[in-house]
Image (cartoon, rainbow, N blue to C red; front, side):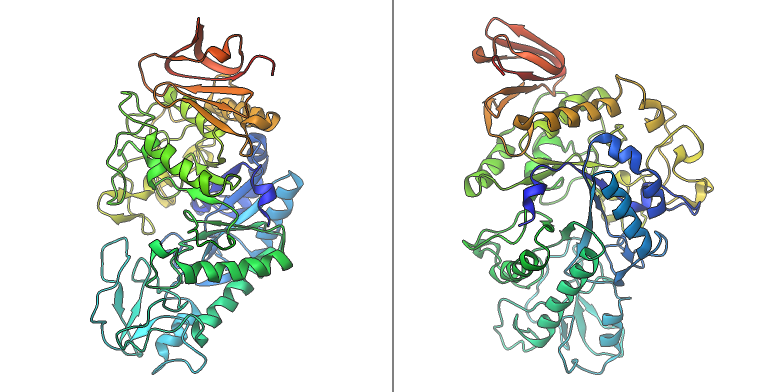
Length: 536
Protein backbone atom coordinates (compact mmCIF):
# COMPACT_ATOMS: atom_id res chain seq x y z
CA UNK A 1 0.00 0.00 0.00
CA UNK A 2 1.04 3.59 -0.60
CA UNK A 3 1.12 4.41 3.10
CA UNK A 4 4.89 3.84 3.35
CA UNK A 5 5.56 7.45 2.36
CA UNK A 6 2.49 8.82 4.12
CA UNK A 7 3.79 7.78 7.55
CA UNK A 8 6.70 10.21 7.15
CA UNK A 9 4.70 13.04 5.59
CA UNK A 10 3.74 16.51 6.75
CA UNK A 11 0.63 17.77 4.95
CA UNK A 12 -0.50 21.29 4.10
CA UNK A 13 -4.22 21.82 3.48
CA UNK A 14 -5.24 24.47 0.95
CA UNK A 15 -8.78 25.80 0.70
CA UNK A 16 -8.32 27.00 -2.91
CA UNK A 17 -10.93 29.77 -2.80
CA UNK A 18 -8.95 31.59 -0.13
CA UNK A 19 -5.27 30.92 -0.73
CA UNK A 20 -4.04 33.21 -3.52
CA UNK A 21 -5.89 35.02 -6.34
CA UNK A 22 -3.74 35.44 -9.44
CA UNK A 23 -6.32 36.99 -11.80
CA UNK A 24 -7.98 39.62 -9.62
CA UNK A 25 -11.50 38.19 -9.52
CA UNK A 26 -11.52 37.97 -5.71
CA UNK A 27 -11.36 34.16 -5.58
CA UNK A 28 -8.24 32.06 -5.14
CA UNK A 29 -7.06 29.87 -8.01
CA UNK A 30 -4.45 27.29 -9.00
CA UNK A 31 -2.19 29.84 -10.68
CA UNK A 32 -2.07 31.63 -7.34
CA UNK A 33 -0.96 28.39 -5.68
CA UNK A 34 1.79 27.92 -8.28
CA UNK A 35 3.06 31.42 -7.56
CA UNK A 36 3.21 30.64 -3.83
CA UNK A 37 4.78 27.17 -3.99
CA UNK A 38 8.13 28.46 -2.75
CA UNK A 39 6.45 29.59 0.47
CA UNK A 40 4.83 26.18 0.92
CA UNK A 41 8.14 24.42 0.25
CA UNK A 42 9.90 26.70 2.75
CA UNK A 43 7.74 25.25 5.52
CA UNK A 44 9.23 21.80 5.02
CA UNK A 45 5.92 20.11 4.18
CA UNK A 46 5.87 17.45 1.48
CA UNK A 47 2.17 16.96 0.66
CA UNK A 48 -0.45 19.51 -0.42
CA UNK A 49 -4.07 18.52 0.16
CA UNK A 50 -6.53 20.54 -1.90
CA UNK A 51 -10.16 20.88 -0.90
CA UNK A 52 -12.42 20.15 -3.91
CA UNK A 53 -11.39 21.99 -7.06
CA UNK A 54 -13.78 20.34 -9.53
CA UNK A 55 -16.55 22.02 -11.51
CA UNK A 56 -19.40 22.92 -9.17
CA UNK A 57 -22.21 25.44 -8.58
CA UNK A 58 -20.59 25.87 -5.12
CA UNK A 59 -23.69 25.49 -2.99
CA UNK A 60 -21.42 23.71 -0.51
CA UNK A 61 -18.03 25.22 -1.34
CA UNK A 62 -17.27 22.66 -4.05
CA UNK A 63 -18.42 19.61 -2.11
CA UNK A 64 -21.28 19.55 -4.63
CA UNK A 65 -19.50 18.28 -7.75
CA UNK A 66 -20.93 18.84 -11.21
CA UNK A 67 -18.05 17.25 -13.13
CA UNK A 68 -15.40 15.08 -11.50
CA UNK A 69 -13.08 15.26 -14.50
CA UNK A 70 -12.92 19.03 -14.98
CA UNK A 71 -11.42 21.72 -12.78
CA UNK A 72 -13.79 24.53 -11.85
CA UNK A 73 -13.16 27.39 -14.32
CA UNK A 74 -12.69 29.87 -11.49
CA UNK A 75 -9.62 27.87 -10.40
CA UNK A 76 -8.19 27.34 -13.87
CA UNK A 77 -7.93 24.28 -16.07
CA UNK A 78 -6.88 20.65 -15.92
CA UNK A 79 -3.56 21.80 -17.36
CA UNK A 80 -3.13 24.00 -14.30
CA UNK A 81 -3.54 20.94 -12.09
CA UNK A 82 -0.85 19.20 -14.10
CA UNK A 83 1.42 22.23 -13.67
CA UNK A 84 0.77 22.37 -9.91
CA UNK A 85 1.67 18.68 -9.69
CA UNK A 86 4.83 19.13 -11.76
CA UNK A 87 6.02 22.27 -9.97
CA UNK A 88 5.25 20.78 -6.57
CA UNK A 89 7.09 17.58 -7.46
CA UNK A 90 10.11 19.69 -8.46
CA UNK A 91 10.12 20.92 -4.86
CA UNK A 92 9.70 17.43 -3.40
CA UNK A 93 5.98 17.87 -2.70
CA UNK A 94 3.13 15.51 -3.61
CA UNK A 95 -0.45 16.62 -4.35
CA UNK A 96 -3.57 14.99 -2.87
CA UNK A 97 -7.09 15.91 -4.03
CA UNK A 98 -10.39 15.81 -2.16
CA UNK A 99 -12.77 13.19 -3.57
CA UNK A 100 -16.48 13.59 -2.87
CA UNK A 101 -17.53 9.98 -3.31
CA UNK A 102 -21.01 9.81 -1.83
CA UNK A 103 -22.96 12.50 -3.66
CA UNK A 104 -22.85 15.00 -6.51
CA UNK A 105 -24.44 18.33 -7.33
CA UNK A 106 -27.96 18.47 -8.79
CA UNK A 107 -26.15 20.09 -11.74
CA UNK A 108 -24.20 16.92 -12.53
CA UNK A 109 -25.25 15.48 -15.92
CA UNK A 110 -25.91 12.12 -14.23
CA UNK A 111 -28.57 13.66 -12.03
CA UNK A 112 -30.04 15.86 -14.74
CA UNK A 113 -30.56 12.79 -16.94
CA UNK A 114 -32.31 10.84 -14.21
CA UNK A 115 -34.40 13.85 -13.22
CA UNK A 116 -35.63 14.14 -16.82
CA UNK A 117 -36.57 10.45 -17.05
CA UNK A 118 -40.04 9.04 -16.45
CA UNK A 119 -38.74 6.10 -14.44
CA UNK A 120 -35.68 4.07 -13.49
CA UNK A 121 -32.78 3.98 -15.93
CA UNK A 122 -32.58 0.70 -17.88
CA UNK A 123 -28.95 0.24 -16.84
CA UNK A 124 -29.60 1.17 -13.20
CA UNK A 125 -30.12 4.48 -11.41
CA UNK A 126 -27.04 6.33 -10.20
CA UNK A 127 -29.14 8.02 -7.48
CA UNK A 128 -31.65 6.82 -4.90
CA UNK A 129 -35.26 7.47 -5.85
CA UNK A 130 -38.64 6.46 -4.43
CA UNK A 131 -42.13 7.40 -5.61
CA UNK A 132 -43.65 7.69 -2.13
CA UNK A 133 -41.98 8.87 1.05
CA UNK A 134 -40.74 5.83 3.02
CA UNK A 135 -42.89 4.84 5.96
CA UNK A 136 -39.79 4.83 8.14
CA UNK A 137 -37.86 8.05 8.51
CA UNK A 138 -34.22 7.63 7.55
CA UNK A 139 -31.72 10.45 7.90
CA UNK A 140 -28.12 11.12 8.90
CA UNK A 141 -28.35 14.69 7.71
CA UNK A 142 -26.35 17.42 9.45
CA UNK A 143 -28.69 20.36 8.90
CA UNK A 144 -31.52 18.42 10.54
CA UNK A 145 -33.76 18.78 7.50
CA UNK A 146 -35.67 15.93 5.81
CA UNK A 147 -33.42 13.43 4.09
CA UNK A 148 -35.78 13.02 1.15
CA UNK A 149 -36.29 15.83 -1.35
CA UNK A 150 -39.34 16.07 -3.64
CA UNK A 151 -38.32 15.76 -7.25
CA UNK A 152 -38.68 19.06 -9.14
CA UNK A 153 -39.72 16.94 -12.12
CA UNK A 154 -40.40 15.60 -14.53
CA UNK A 155 -39.40 12.41 -12.66
CA UNK A 156 -41.97 11.65 -9.98
CA UNK A 157 -41.28 11.04 -6.33
CA UNK A 158 -38.31 11.88 -4.13
CA UNK A 159 -34.54 11.57 -4.10
CA UNK A 160 -32.28 10.95 -1.11
CA UNK A 161 -29.73 13.65 -0.28
CA UNK A 162 -26.54 13.46 1.74
CA UNK A 163 -26.30 16.98 3.16
CA UNK A 164 -27.93 19.94 1.43
CA UNK A 165 -30.92 19.48 -0.88
CA UNK A 166 -28.59 20.21 -3.79
CA UNK A 167 -26.42 17.17 -2.98
CA UNK A 168 -28.25 14.01 -4.09
CA UNK A 169 -26.80 10.80 -2.68
CA UNK A 170 -25.18 8.45 -5.15
CA UNK A 171 -26.61 4.95 -5.19
CA UNK A 172 -24.19 2.36 -3.82
CA UNK A 173 -27.00 0.12 -2.63
CA UNK A 174 -28.50 -0.70 0.75
CA UNK A 175 -27.30 -3.00 3.49
CA UNK A 176 -30.89 -3.74 4.53
CA UNK A 177 -33.69 -4.42 2.03
CA UNK A 178 -36.60 -5.28 4.31
CA UNK A 179 -40.13 -3.91 4.43
CA UNK A 180 -41.06 -4.31 0.78
CA UNK A 181 -39.25 -1.12 -0.24
CA UNK A 182 -38.33 -2.28 -3.72
CA UNK A 183 -36.47 0.94 -4.51
CA UNK A 184 -33.68 -0.19 -2.17
CA UNK A 185 -31.09 -1.62 -4.54
CA UNK A 186 -28.74 -4.38 -3.53
CA UNK A 187 -25.06 -3.43 -3.44
CA UNK A 188 -24.49 -5.49 -6.59
CA UNK A 189 -27.45 -4.08 -8.51
CA UNK A 190 -26.73 -2.37 -11.86
CA UNK A 191 -26.91 1.20 -10.49
CA UNK A 192 -24.48 0.65 -7.61
CA UNK A 193 -22.11 -1.24 -9.91
CA UNK A 194 -22.13 1.69 -12.35
CA UNK A 195 -21.10 4.00 -9.55
CA UNK A 196 -18.32 1.70 -8.39
CA UNK A 197 -16.89 1.70 -11.90
CA UNK A 198 -17.21 5.49 -12.05
CA UNK A 199 -15.25 5.87 -8.80
CA UNK A 200 -12.44 3.82 -10.28
CA UNK A 201 -12.47 5.86 -13.50
CA UNK A 202 -12.36 9.18 -11.61
CA UNK A 203 -9.48 8.06 -9.42
CA UNK A 204 -7.50 6.72 -12.40
CA UNK A 205 -8.08 9.93 -14.38
CA UNK A 206 -6.36 12.10 -11.78
CA UNK A 207 -3.69 9.59 -10.76
CA UNK A 208 -2.67 9.46 -14.41
CA UNK A 209 -2.09 13.22 -14.19
CA UNK A 210 0.39 12.71 -11.37
CA UNK A 211 -1.83 13.20 -8.33
CA UNK A 212 -0.56 11.15 -5.36
CA UNK A 213 -3.93 10.14 -3.91
CA UNK A 214 -7.15 11.32 -2.37
CA UNK A 215 -8.71 12.39 0.88
CA UNK A 216 -12.21 10.96 0.65
CA UNK A 217 -15.11 13.05 1.91
CA UNK A 218 -17.82 11.11 3.80
CA UNK A 219 -15.98 7.93 2.86
CA UNK A 220 -18.17 5.68 5.00
CA UNK A 221 -21.55 7.01 3.91
CA UNK A 222 -21.80 5.13 0.62
CA UNK A 223 -23.92 2.02 1.28
CA UNK A 224 -27.05 3.12 3.12
CA UNK A 225 -28.61 1.79 6.32
CA UNK A 226 -25.38 0.25 7.56
CA UNK A 227 -24.57 -0.25 11.22
CA UNK A 228 -21.37 1.26 12.62
CA UNK A 229 -21.45 -1.37 15.34
CA UNK A 230 -21.14 -3.99 12.59
CA UNK A 231 -18.25 -2.18 10.94
CA UNK A 232 -20.17 -0.79 7.94
CA UNK A 233 -19.30 -4.03 6.23
CA UNK A 234 -20.66 -3.33 2.77
CA UNK A 235 -19.04 0.09 2.47
CA UNK A 236 -15.71 -1.18 3.77
CA UNK A 237 -15.92 -4.11 1.34
CA UNK A 238 -16.48 -1.61 -1.50
CA UNK A 239 -13.39 0.35 -0.54
CA UNK A 240 -11.39 -2.85 -0.04
CA UNK A 241 -12.21 -3.91 -3.59
CA UNK A 242 -11.04 -0.53 -4.84
CA UNK A 243 -7.87 -0.79 -2.73
CA UNK A 244 -7.02 -4.14 -4.31
CA UNK A 245 -7.25 -2.53 -7.73
CA UNK A 246 -5.10 0.42 -6.60
CA UNK A 247 -2.43 -1.88 -5.21
CA UNK A 248 -2.11 -3.40 -8.67
CA UNK A 249 -2.54 -0.32 -10.86
CA UNK A 250 -1.20 2.52 -8.67
CA UNK A 251 0.68 0.98 -5.74
CA UNK A 252 2.12 4.29 -4.52
CA UNK A 253 -1.26 6.08 -4.32
CA UNK A 254 -2.84 6.81 -0.95
CA UNK A 255 -6.44 6.96 0.23
CA UNK A 256 -7.13 9.00 3.36
CA UNK A 257 -10.65 8.83 4.83
CA UNK A 258 -12.68 11.50 6.52
CA UNK A 259 -12.60 9.94 9.98
CA UNK A 260 -11.63 6.50 11.19
CA UNK A 261 -11.96 3.36 9.09
CA UNK A 262 -14.20 0.71 10.71
CA UNK A 263 -12.47 -2.51 11.68
CA UNK A 264 -14.13 -5.62 10.28
CA UNK A 265 -11.31 -8.11 10.73
CA UNK A 266 -10.36 -7.92 7.06
CA UNK A 267 -7.63 -5.94 5.31
CA UNK A 268 -7.90 -2.17 5.63
CA UNK A 269 -8.68 -0.16 2.52
CA UNK A 270 -7.37 3.23 3.59
CA UNK A 271 -3.80 4.18 4.38
CA UNK A 272 -4.52 6.07 7.60
CA UNK A 273 -7.15 7.23 10.05
CA UNK A 274 -7.95 10.90 10.55
CA UNK A 275 -8.65 12.38 13.98
CA UNK A 276 -10.72 15.25 12.65
CA UNK A 277 -10.90 18.74 14.12
CA UNK A 278 -14.61 18.39 14.88
CA UNK A 279 -14.36 14.88 16.32
CA UNK A 280 -14.07 14.09 20.00
CA UNK A 281 -10.37 13.25 20.27
CA UNK A 282 -9.16 16.45 18.64
CA UNK A 283 -11.96 18.63 20.02
CA UNK A 284 -11.17 17.65 23.60
CA UNK A 285 -7.72 19.12 23.14
CA UNK A 286 -8.35 22.33 21.20
CA UNK A 287 -12.02 23.25 20.78
CA UNK A 288 -12.78 26.19 23.07
CA UNK A 289 -16.34 26.46 21.65
CA UNK A 290 -15.72 30.02 20.43
CA UNK A 291 -16.70 29.01 16.90
CA UNK A 292 -19.88 27.18 17.94
CA UNK A 293 -20.90 23.81 19.29
CA UNK A 294 -22.17 20.81 17.35
CA UNK A 295 -24.52 18.20 18.85
CA UNK A 296 -21.98 15.36 18.64
CA UNK A 297 -19.06 17.27 20.17
CA UNK A 298 -17.97 16.45 23.71
CA UNK A 299 -19.14 19.09 26.22
CA UNK A 300 -15.72 19.27 27.83
CA UNK A 301 -13.15 21.97 28.55
CA UNK A 302 -10.25 21.81 26.08
CA UNK A 303 -6.86 20.79 27.41
CA UNK A 304 -5.10 23.54 25.44
CA UNK A 305 -6.74 26.32 27.42
CA UNK A 306 -5.30 29.15 29.49
CA UNK A 307 -7.32 28.27 32.60
CA UNK A 308 -6.03 24.70 32.66
CA UNK A 309 -9.40 23.04 33.22
CA UNK A 310 -9.03 20.34 30.56
CA UNK A 311 -7.79 16.80 30.39
CA UNK A 312 -5.92 14.63 27.90
CA UNK A 313 -7.90 11.54 28.94
CA UNK A 314 -10.51 11.53 26.16
CA UNK A 315 -7.81 12.04 23.55
CA UNK A 316 -5.51 9.38 24.98
CA UNK A 317 -8.33 6.84 25.27
CA UNK A 318 -9.13 7.29 21.57
CA UNK A 319 -5.51 7.28 20.54
CA UNK A 320 -4.65 4.19 22.59
CA UNK A 321 -7.66 2.31 21.24
CA UNK A 322 -6.54 3.01 17.69
CA UNK A 323 -2.98 2.03 18.50
CA UNK A 324 -3.98 -1.24 20.17
CA UNK A 325 -5.82 -2.28 17.02
CA UNK A 326 -3.07 -1.21 14.58
CA UNK A 327 0.18 -0.11 16.25
CA UNK A 328 1.88 1.07 13.06
CA UNK A 329 -1.09 2.65 11.30
CA UNK A 330 -0.67 6.38 10.54
CA UNK A 331 -3.15 8.71 12.22
CA UNK A 332 -3.51 12.20 10.79
CA UNK A 333 -4.23 15.23 12.97
CA UNK A 334 -4.61 18.82 11.74
CA UNK A 335 -3.87 22.17 13.28
CA UNK A 336 -7.35 23.11 11.97
CA UNK A 337 -9.36 22.61 8.79
CA UNK A 338 -11.96 24.08 6.46
CA UNK A 339 -14.84 22.90 8.64
CA UNK A 340 -14.13 24.39 12.03
CA UNK A 341 -12.11 26.77 14.19
CA UNK A 342 -8.42 27.56 13.89
CA UNK A 343 -5.97 27.17 16.77
CA UNK A 344 -6.07 30.97 17.17
CA UNK A 345 -9.75 31.16 18.07
CA UNK A 346 -11.74 33.15 20.60
CA UNK A 347 -9.70 33.89 23.75
CA UNK A 348 -6.70 31.84 22.61
CA UNK A 349 -3.84 34.24 21.92
CA UNK A 350 -0.71 33.96 19.73
CA UNK A 351 1.50 33.29 22.76
CA UNK A 352 -0.51 30.12 23.37
CA UNK A 353 0.24 28.68 19.93
CA UNK A 354 3.77 27.49 20.70
CA UNK A 355 2.64 24.74 23.06
CA UNK A 356 -0.14 23.64 20.70
CA UNK A 357 2.10 23.49 17.63
CA UNK A 358 4.84 21.71 19.58
CA UNK A 359 2.39 18.99 20.53
CA UNK A 360 0.92 18.64 17.04
CA UNK A 361 4.32 18.26 15.38
CA UNK A 362 5.94 15.97 17.96
CA UNK A 363 3.12 13.65 18.91
CA UNK A 364 3.05 10.39 16.97
CA UNK A 365 0.55 11.56 14.38
CA UNK A 366 1.03 12.56 10.76
CA UNK A 367 0.55 16.35 11.07
CA UNK A 368 -1.49 18.46 8.69
CA UNK A 369 -0.93 22.22 8.69
CA UNK A 370 -3.99 24.24 7.65
CA UNK A 371 -3.13 27.19 5.43
CA UNK A 372 -2.60 30.33 7.51
CA UNK A 373 -1.91 28.46 10.73
CA UNK A 374 1.81 28.82 9.99
CA UNK A 375 1.43 32.54 10.76
CA UNK A 376 -1.25 32.21 13.44
CA UNK A 377 -4.24 33.47 11.44
CA UNK A 378 -7.30 33.73 13.63
CA UNK A 379 -10.81 32.34 13.30
CA UNK A 380 -13.06 35.30 12.45
CA UNK A 381 -16.53 35.24 14.02
CA UNK A 382 -19.53 36.75 12.30
CA UNK A 383 -18.44 36.02 8.73
CA UNK A 384 -21.16 36.01 6.01
CA UNK A 385 -22.76 32.74 4.92
CA UNK A 386 -20.76 32.12 1.75
CA UNK A 387 -21.18 28.86 -0.19
CA UNK A 388 -23.04 26.99 2.52
CA UNK A 389 -20.68 27.94 5.35
CA UNK A 390 -23.48 28.14 7.93
CA UNK A 391 -25.13 24.74 7.96
CA UNK A 392 -26.23 24.98 11.58
CA UNK A 393 -27.25 28.15 13.48
CA UNK A 394 -24.34 27.75 15.90
CA UNK A 395 -21.79 26.51 13.38
CA UNK A 396 -20.19 29.05 11.01
CA UNK A 397 -17.42 27.53 8.92
CA UNK A 398 -16.64 30.80 7.09
CA UNK A 399 -14.55 32.03 10.01
CA UNK A 400 -11.80 29.52 9.20
CA UNK A 401 -12.02 30.07 5.43
CA UNK A 402 -10.94 33.71 5.20
CA UNK A 403 -8.23 34.78 2.72
CA UNK A 404 -4.58 34.02 3.34
CA UNK A 405 -2.69 37.01 4.71
CA UNK A 406 0.45 37.48 2.63
CA UNK A 407 1.53 41.07 3.26
CA UNK A 408 0.40 44.54 4.29
CA UNK A 409 -0.76 45.53 0.80
CA UNK A 410 -4.39 45.77 -0.34
CA UNK A 411 -6.43 42.75 0.74
CA UNK A 412 -3.38 41.48 2.64
CA UNK A 413 -1.81 40.51 -0.69
CA UNK A 414 -4.48 37.89 -1.40
CA UNK A 415 -6.09 39.63 -4.38
CA UNK A 416 -6.03 42.85 -6.41
CA UNK A 417 -9.84 42.83 -6.58
CA UNK A 418 -11.97 45.43 -4.87
CA UNK A 419 -12.59 44.38 -1.28
CA UNK A 420 -16.31 44.01 -2.05
CA UNK A 421 -15.54 41.21 -4.53
CA UNK A 422 -13.43 39.05 -2.25
CA UNK A 423 -14.54 35.50 -1.54
CA UNK A 424 -14.64 36.41 2.17
CA UNK A 425 -13.49 39.54 4.00
CA UNK A 426 -9.90 39.95 5.11
CA UNK A 427 -9.20 40.03 8.85
CA UNK A 428 -9.79 43.75 9.65
CA UNK A 429 -7.38 43.80 12.61
CA UNK A 430 -4.46 46.09 11.70
CA UNK A 431 -2.24 43.77 13.76
CA UNK A 432 -3.21 40.73 11.70
CA UNK A 433 -0.27 38.39 11.05
CA UNK A 434 1.20 38.20 7.55
CA UNK A 435 3.82 36.08 5.85
CA UNK A 436 5.86 39.16 4.89
CA UNK A 437 5.98 40.49 8.45
CA UNK A 438 7.04 37.12 9.87
CA UNK A 439 9.35 35.97 7.09
CA UNK A 440 12.59 37.22 8.61
CA UNK A 441 11.51 37.43 12.24
CA UNK A 442 13.14 34.60 14.21
CA UNK A 443 10.57 35.08 17.00
CA UNK A 444 7.56 34.69 14.67
CA UNK A 445 5.08 31.84 14.45
CA UNK A 446 6.23 31.21 10.88
CA UNK A 447 9.86 30.79 11.94
CA UNK A 448 8.77 28.55 14.80
CA UNK A 449 6.74 26.28 12.49
CA UNK A 450 9.70 25.99 10.12
CA UNK A 451 12.00 25.06 13.00
CA UNK A 452 9.52 22.53 14.34
CA UNK A 453 9.12 20.78 11.01
CA UNK A 454 12.87 20.82 10.36
CA UNK A 455 13.53 19.33 13.79
CA UNK A 456 10.91 16.65 13.18
CA UNK A 457 12.54 15.80 9.85
CA UNK A 458 16.00 15.59 11.39
CA UNK A 459 14.85 13.54 14.39
CA UNK A 460 13.10 10.23 13.55
CA UNK A 461 12.15 9.85 17.23
CA UNK A 462 9.70 12.76 16.77
CA UNK A 463 8.00 11.22 13.72
CA UNK A 464 4.98 8.98 13.32
CA UNK A 465 6.92 5.69 13.39
CA UNK A 466 8.56 6.09 16.82
CA UNK A 467 7.16 4.93 20.14
CA UNK A 468 5.26 7.17 22.59
CA UNK A 469 5.37 6.87 26.35
CA UNK A 470 3.28 9.30 28.35
CA UNK A 471 5.05 10.45 31.50
CA UNK A 472 2.41 12.88 32.77
CA UNK A 473 -1.15 13.28 31.47
CA UNK A 474 -1.95 16.59 33.11
CA UNK A 475 -0.27 20.00 33.10
CA UNK A 476 2.43 19.95 31.82
CA UNK A 477 1.64 17.19 29.32
CA UNK A 478 4.86 15.21 29.11
CA UNK A 479 5.86 12.29 26.90
CA UNK A 480 8.92 10.44 25.65
CA UNK A 481 9.34 9.82 21.93
CA UNK A 482 11.38 6.93 20.61
CA UNK A 483 12.98 6.36 24.00
CA UNK A 484 15.36 9.23 23.28
CA UNK A 485 13.48 12.55 23.33
CA UNK A 486 11.25 14.23 25.87
CA UNK A 487 8.47 16.66 24.98
CA UNK A 488 6.77 18.84 27.57
CA UNK A 489 3.96 21.33 26.87
CA UNK A 490 2.09 23.55 29.32
CA UNK A 491 -0.96 25.10 27.61
CA UNK A 492 -2.22 26.84 30.75
CA UNK A 493 -1.38 30.33 32.01
CA UNK A 494 0.00 29.17 35.36
CA UNK A 495 3.38 27.40 35.65
CA UNK A 496 3.40 23.65 36.13
CA UNK A 497 5.94 21.10 37.35
CA UNK A 498 6.61 17.49 36.44
CA UNK A 499 8.91 14.86 37.92
CA UNK A 500 11.07 13.12 35.29
CA UNK A 501 14.22 11.85 37.05
CA UNK A 502 15.41 10.07 33.91
CA UNK A 503 15.68 13.45 32.13
CA UNK A 504 18.38 14.86 34.41
CA UNK A 505 20.92 16.48 32.13
CA UNK A 506 18.62 16.47 29.08
CA UNK A 507 19.62 18.85 26.28
CA UNK A 508 16.96 21.32 25.05
CA UNK A 509 16.60 21.34 21.26
CA UNK A 510 13.69 23.77 21.05
CA UNK A 511 12.25 25.22 24.23
CA UNK A 512 10.62 28.21 25.88
CA UNK A 513 10.10 28.62 29.60
CA UNK A 514 11.39 25.17 30.61
CA UNK A 515 13.69 25.06 33.63
CA UNK A 516 15.28 21.99 35.18
CA UNK A 517 14.46 21.09 38.81
CA UNK A 518 16.23 18.48 40.96
CA UNK A 519 13.86 15.73 39.76
CA UNK A 520 12.27 17.13 36.59
CA UNK A 521 11.11 20.42 35.12
CA UNK A 522 9.23 23.58 35.89
CA UNK A 523 7.41 24.92 32.84
CA UNK A 524 6.21 28.51 32.60
CA UNK A 525 2.69 29.30 31.50
CA UNK A 526 2.32 28.53 27.77
CA UNK A 527 5.81 27.00 27.84
CA UNK A 528 7.06 24.06 25.81
CA UNK A 529 10.18 22.06 25.26
CA UNK A 530 11.70 19.33 23.09
CA UNK A 531 14.74 17.80 24.78
CA UNK A 532 17.18 15.04 23.94
CA UNK A 533 17.53 12.64 26.86
CA UNK A 534 21.01 12.00 28.24
CA UNK A 535 23.09 9.87 25.90
CA UNK A 536 21.08 10.80 22.79
